[in-house]
Amino acid sequence: MADADHVVPVALLEEDAPGEPAPRPVRRWRAYAAGAVVLLAVAGVSLGASELDARRAEARRDALAALGWPALDLAEPPAEAWRLEAGGRLLVEGEGLLVLDAGGSVPLYVGVDPATGEERWKQTGRLGEWCQAWWSDLPEDRTWQQAQVLRRTVPPSALVCASSGQVAEDEVPEGTTSRLRVIDLASGEITTDRVLPGALLAGEEVPGGVVSVRALPGGAVAVSRVALPDGATQWERTFASGGPTPWVGSWLQGDVLTLHATDGTVLRALDVRTGEDAPPAEALDDALVVAVLPDGAGLELRYDGAEVVGSVREADGEERFSFLGDPWVPALDDGSLPDRVVVHRTGHGGSRLVALAVRDGSVLWDVPMPMSYDNGVLRLDGVLVGGSPLLVATDLRTGERLWEVVTGEMAPPAITDGTRVAVPVLEDDGTTSLVALELRSGAEAWRLPVGHVRDWYVLRDGTVLAVQEGLVVAYR
Figure 1 (cartoon, rainbow, N blue to C red):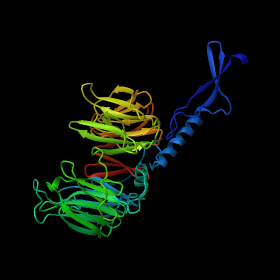
Figure 2: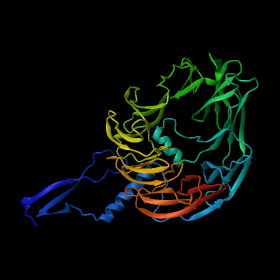
Figure 3: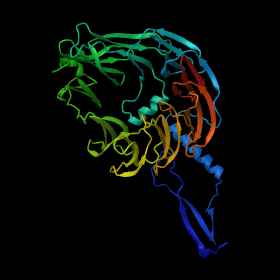
Figure 4: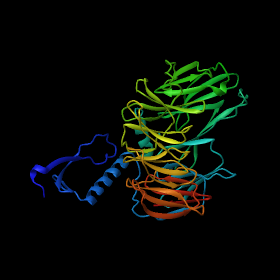
């Protein structure tokens, strides 16, 4: 062993903990120079590798729980819990109930007990052109991230479906109506059925209800606020559109709904709480806010001809920088390495994945990426997983490709316990297997054949639904 004069303090940084920005407090190590051999010992409490791994795994699970993600254990393959002869897609997960849109030539909706797979109710006939879950008690002052967590953790109050009515070219025929229905999740009964004059152009969710924008015959626009779940009209305004009514646009910022003509001219701005006129909200290039970054800036997206143009904009509306490409914003993001956004670009340089610094848009790394048609699946512990038909895991620090698997046409949902990720892998015979891979190394933990699966869903209790043609199988 070398003497004290050859003892040199060395700081070794552990990998970033989920949800915390770099830099990190470092664990102090001491390096002892002994000829050509370097020995490392912990200065202070010594942790074995297994205990350190256990602590890091626990930190990952805590980070997932804070994001409202289900607690999964992927150390062993899940077992089949139940199967139901019904295809289609999952519309909503309620309190102890699933609602499936079974599709078919005759529209069919099925209420299912998620614990047993037993049918609770059936509803025949199309409920609407689109349906979505509705929450009655989400706080009004919630942030974007808080809303996402609440929607994953708080069961919805009802299912709301709407039909838009008919539009003939640039005119709305006389007698055109749209429809708003509210379906009780426990019974499947239609509790509210409102017929509204005109063709539905847009619907904006507001606390306690929905604001509808409708095109009326004769070149007029109607805006009304409808309370849910009873369907009572709280206020309604009607005014001239100034152009072809089917193409009136609208956007909601805060409590102000701004309506504009096809040339961008502002037609009217209304306070959605009262229906009274209000100062128009500033339009930000018709940009879609796809994420709110940890420093409060908005990650926005708009289309400029055939190109996707993104920007990072300060909370006061000032643009920090713009970029070309499609930002990868997974539904599951633990906040690790918040100093960068990742963009998928295509063009003359081929398909590429690029990391941009949040502070100024400078390129941190730029690597080739197999052509992909989907967004990121998850961003966890410094690893970004995404893409299809080739699913790729990328080191967020360096851009290094860690592993890849062929999943098929659609990217899978985020199925993870923080240490492993379970992904559907397309086998040579065309069937699918659910395969658990170590998040960073890609090492296979297990493989479960599941047949010809079209869609995947993860429920709040961690149950995984695999939807096949005419069959739903639950694994837990």
